[in-house]
Length: 153
Image (cartoon, rainbow, N blue to C red; front, side):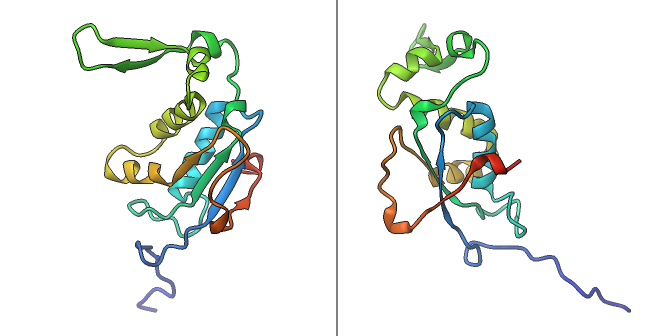
């Protein structure tokens, strides 16, 4: 037999089937939740995964304010940002960041961003992530399906 009886399927932007999923983050550990969310955004759980294409799902995270850190990370971990001015380096702990508006959203988005590929693909994947601190979200029209994130590895 001179030819293969099967071919590797490579997806593109037009042939990808994207879904909408809702994840309840209450009581979840930040790093473990975000690694699974990054895989969902990337499409790694799908059999048609293609590394250079956005073939992941649109992910909605609700109850983001109820995520937890293990150990003493809530008070000891530091998030660094830079204002752009000399001496403008600022440090915040997750406990201080939670008190601010959209603090829990910034914690989760920072963790997921670090787990996505660096470059244009990773930046475009981050637009498929929607984070809400309460139980309400504005994506009912997309008919998202609720999934249990603990069933994923």
